[in-house]
Length: 421
Image (tube, rainbow, N blue to C red; front, side, top):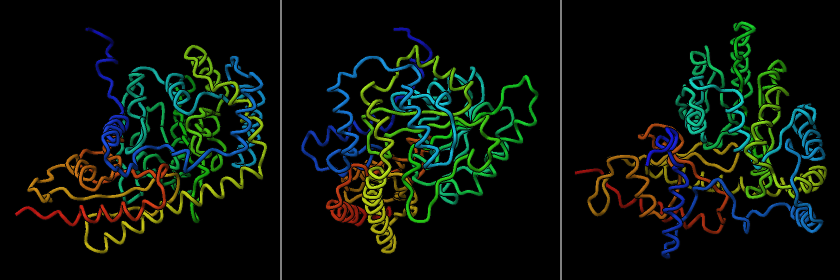
């Protein structure tokens, strides 16, 4: 059957595919340590009780009709005040757009800015930039970030790529790496964008920046979150932010996200979404409008939530460092932010107890799943090279009492491997 070019060329989500395989193993009775999904187990990480109560009350009040296309005014006012207080960014409600999470906003942004053949600059590993670029028929301009920079793109690596580009897609804290931009590096990147736009003629399309900061509340230790407009106010004309309650309140299924930036871009994104219909539900919007004003309850929730996530990240990091010290081919980057740990499993060239050679990184992934019962997402699922030995480990569904068992089983699996004879 002949369908569209997009239908014939679209690549499905590697993470969704892996998740299906894991669910099938679990259904058949296998015990799997599932660290793949960027989601939360609600039994481990429930949403704030006050938010839950407000949602239930909104439904009982029969708030189930269509919301405003741009998001209800009371919610946009609450988000604007919340963002000003928490991040120091002062935008009017008219410069905000609410939708059902971050995904439709990102799609609308790509549609609003890009024509077929326009250049999109992004680093890998990163979440879904390759797919959104493909959706709109734009040109992929890719830089592969490495462990020497915590898998974050640098100004030096981006500088040769920005000439003539229409969109620079940035994310901090980064999915999948759980790492962040330093103040100095983000300042340099902003200066590159400003210089590039200053060089363009008035009739030329400008270079815009998508700044996905979905995890910005979740930083640990001395790590701080920085954003383009906060560092360079001139970036206000070119920066579109993507944010949501999905990760900060463990509310991935509640589906309330927002974008803010230049009103001209936001209004076009709104127009696109009026046809797509990806609105956040009325009841959830009404609940969030009330909840965001409860600063003391939000602070209390975040203090506990962040502490629990950080404990899991650091315990697994420490366990991997102990294995590394014993000579096993594993490593990890010190936790910085989000719910992710960047880990390295470098086993290509080893042989299993049954004599099977691990010839490529996909064989390593299979070995971890089948022998160590450990499910993690390879960076090649985020656009990195197929040979990359790095993985995303998500702790959103991790129970603390299972960490030692997971590390012990991993050590047993690693111990069974040998170099080829």
